[in-house]
View (cartoon, rainbow, N blue to C red):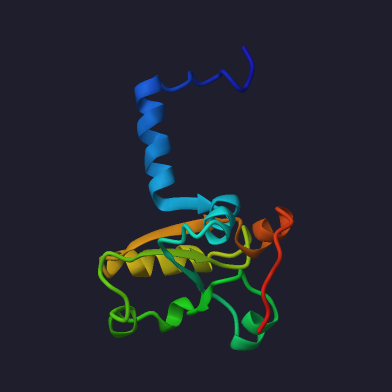
Length: 131
């Protein structure tokens, strides 16, 4: 028996539930890129960390800069209640997207994290925007 199979695999039913839960709270750079480039953007993309200067130098095209510390019910009321927010931060070494997602969920808003953040976007070879 290997360390891989030391613990038995979940049943298919358990696996379906697990992966559905994960996909309900996260998306990836490739899916966001596809949506942005194929006129399928049905979400608001938020760059949730860093200074305005850092955002101006490099961000995902179409993203709005809204640091998680600036997310308030009044600010988020600018969008309809049914809006889905996709948040991202610098990358796997950063928990800014997690903080933003938690804050938005506590406000009763639908939110997903773009796993990988800027690091993942770059790893995929996608171009950044600058303002």
